[in-house]
Length: 122
Image: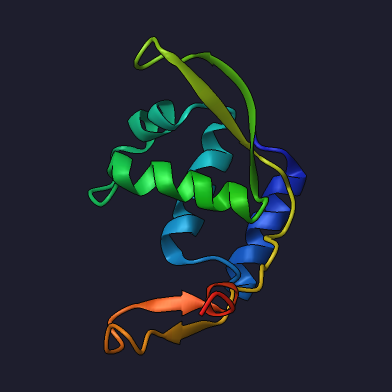
């Protein structure tokens, strides 16, 4: 059963467009099935045609980085039987991090980029 704070936060995130479409879909699924491992979430949410494990695992990491979900514990997964991370929502809004400024590389004719910190090395 999802907590009211998680549902309220989800509604605010959805209304204000604070997350991308796929991240929002994974967050919604996690709210409905939390706490669970990524594979348990995949198995419960597999009814949608676009859902693959490649959609879920990276999105959980991205949602963790913006502090919308957290790793709770490690326990045997009900799907695989192996130890896995259990995920749950935090009830917090996503934190926006400043991305480092990128500059095109003049040595590789603009095919690559480097950050401001890397530029200081040249």
